[in-house]
Length: 217
Image (tube, rainbow, N blue to C red):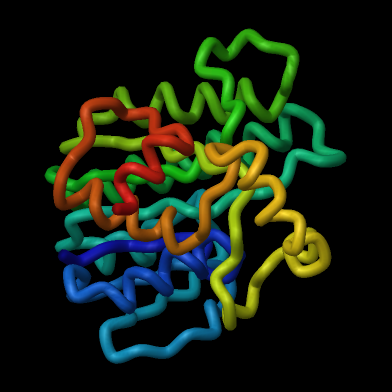
């Protein structure tokens, strides 16, 4: 398969990209990002594009791909709802519509988050915005759209973009797994689940941690 990956200069996208490059099932990866991902590989093509609200200059390069793994995201900390909606909902939907126009039979995988509010009515601002994003993605005429909701993630050893929390507090993850085994996944499991869902499908479009763990096998 040929896949597009966004967010590869961040922790999640880098981890998903890593699994794509290791996978014999993935023939080619196109990374579209606002800065270089820092990875080189014979099956990797990279496009640096700063404005994800205007993709006209690169949309023809998106043609011919079976799947998109959308791993681009930002923290809501310190952000007002209007701005967070702009960089989360508006940006994601613009990219999704653009890539769909180039690949009508595409499968779209969106990295959301555990606790996302699909009712769009809860108290948590980020969860409402993510919920609206999930809801509207599945309304687009993709072959299939899947919303992945990871929680705590174990980083992949050797990758560069591990968040500071995981660098300093990673030793807690094995303890968390003991008391809450379905609260933690690894970046490897997330990447494998995304690859496998393209190959196997899945009966629901919202994938909680237990679903991600099942698909990763």
